[in-house]
Amino acid sequence: MVKNYSLKQLPKIAKEVLKYAEHNVLLFYGEMGVGKTTLIKEIVNQLGVTDNVSSPTFSLVNEYHTNQGEKVFHFDFYRIDHEEEAMDMGIEEYFYSDSLCLVEWPNKVENLLPLKSVTIIITTDQDQQRTIELKNNE
Image (cartoon, rainbow, N blue to C red; front, side, top):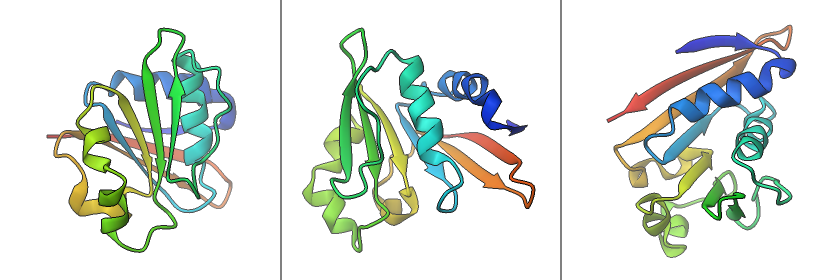
């Protein structure tokens, strides 16, 4: 699926993304400032998370809880230099749990990503019109 959207349409786009969440690992690709964290905030909001949602740039992972008691993990690998850093934090345990994993900057841990995941690519044009592309990976 490929769609153009504005920030006003964010709730609708988040619902579309959640339809693809059958593979619990969602990989968010896009340049700095394109809106990855903003979309993730809306996704977890729709899941009933009431925690303060922010990008875990320094902690690498934030854990949120839905109103159903389910865990959601939000990763930001922008600041890591080596995949071993993700291995040291036990990334595989997160990815192969039943919990939803939302991953910013997955290209930094490319060799550690599960085969079953969803790729989400967000781009903007010079008019700040956003385009989202979603693809199931098997």
